[in-house]
Amino acid sequence: MVLSRENIIEGLIDLKNERENESKKIIMNIKEIVESQNIDDMEKLKLINNELGKMLVI
View 1: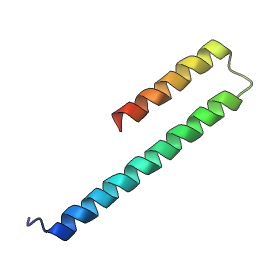
View 2 (view 1 turned 180 degrees about the horizontal axis):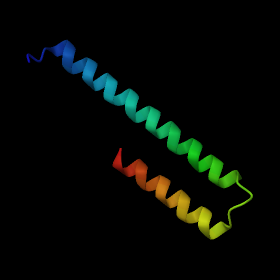
View 3 (view 1 turned 90 degrees about the vertical axis):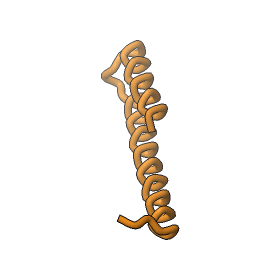
View 4 (view 1 turned 120 degrees about the vertical axis):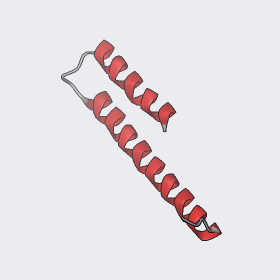
């Protein structure tokens, strides 16, 4: 496999798009957790913390 400048740039753009999509999913999950009426506050904090942990990984 030969890596050209164009291939590298396309790969970086793809990675950026994937990270943006994952970040959007995490933000939507946090929003759903906050708006949920069926979850107590301590459980919400745990769930939000888990989602924020995912942000550090991407």
